[in-house]
Length: 198
Image 1 (cartoon, rainbow, N blue to C red):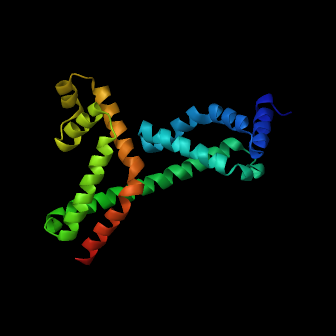
Image 2: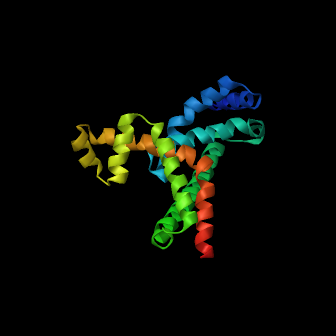
């Protein structure tokens, strides 16, 4: 005999396939917390895990017509989340490698004209993102990233809690992450290509 819970989920899935937003919202509310915790095991960053959780549900909505062939929505959801999370981790790793390559080659290229142009573009990009942030968040970013102070040092200096410092840094990191793909990737790739040609 089919339980009431299983029947309801099957019904919600059928309604979701038929573009029912209320069914999507019900499934989202049922699984969002569990899915966030699942992603957090891979990512270790609450804000990034939250972003990925939202992205996974967006994928579910965008591919809702394909869900009619799914036997277990829960299994499908968590497999989708795992795959999407691993893809994001690969992307982040590539970005870290790119940044590491730039930093490693900085002493050899700091007098190069093309590097100086990219450095100027990068500086303008940093300023654009920072100008979009609240004043306190900019101040915390400056102290942590530019002056390389610890969260505890910044908290003591500004008279705020360490948790508040962390929240400001998460906000600034999210702002940079949200614009990175749109603004910076081409420059980073060009810079790495120039290194390989040298």
